[in-house]
Image 1 (cartoon, rainbow, N blue to C red):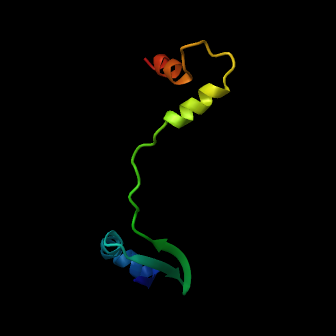
Image 2 (tube, rainbow, N blue to C red):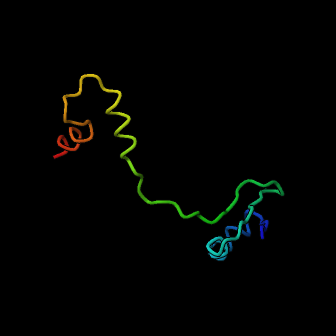
Image 3 (tube, rainbow, N blue to C red):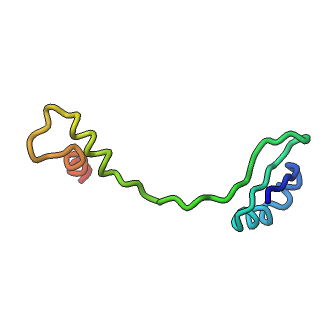
Length: 80
């Protein structure tokens, strides 16, 4: 269920609104009756990205890369 609250009420009851969002509810925040923001629950997203496809694409575009090496390996070696 979506609900609408004014900015002052949202400020006053932020903890309650966050709890409602945690439970899956969406809340629209208005200012002078006009919607300005929406508080929504965060979807389950992976915290880290799988970079293997990215590095494979980067390596495939390089013409001067030495055989058996990769840009990722070179970058990681440079960080040490």
